[in-house]
Image 1: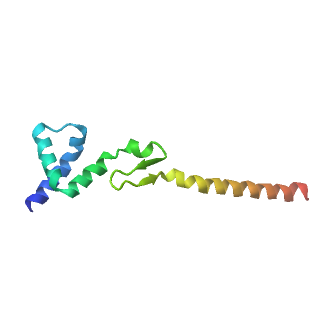
Image 2 (image 1 turned 90 degrees about the vertical axis):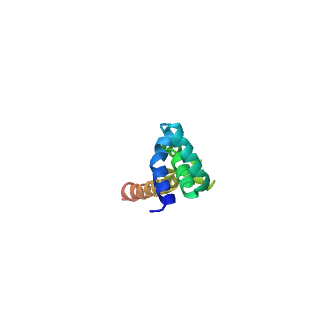
Image 3 (image 1 turned 135 degrees about the vertical axis):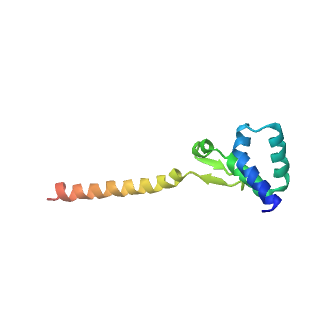
Length: 103
């Protein structure tokens, strides 16, 4: 195993603790130095920084990695639910018209 790969393994194991502020000063320095020259570990850290609460709060959020806005899954479903509800009401109206008004 190469030294760089071994360092990446160590940093990836330490990143959750690093984000919570539970690593020591030496570990913090090691992680910061590694992140300066390793784009893959830096990208992993950026993904980890997007917390679950950030994703669930609000309708949209900005993806810190790509800068694009992402839409919550439920927002996409709202339109489909509205159309299905409208079609169901329309069908019930016609059933009522056929059965009760035109016997």
